[in-house]
Image 1 (cartoon, rainbow, N blue to C red):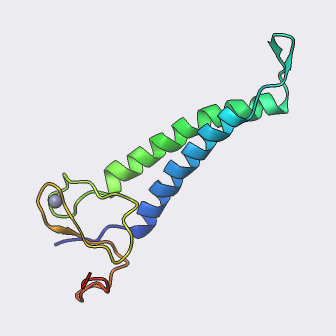
Image 2 (image 1 turned 45 degrees about the vertical axis):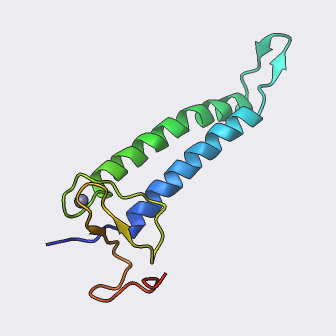
Length: 115
Ligand SMILES: [Zn+2]
């Protein structure tokens, strides 16, 4: 019995990936406060530290969610990409069967089938 993949889980993984990238970029954009050659340990310093650590936590969490929840429901070996949108028809790279998300109406043809 095929169980559709959770769109909510796909969104969560995508948001975690995007947010970790944003943190990495922000960290690069914000300079440390320095006095001479020394970094000032202030609120900004801790903010930057968390910007450096947070992406790893987010990426780890996204990887776990992805590996556990976004796999082909038929063979459980192919992966579904979280940026696949509703209405797109995607097929498993391993077994070739369609990967269905839970926001596509069950039993009917998806709306964008005639593309
Ligand atoms: Zn498959």
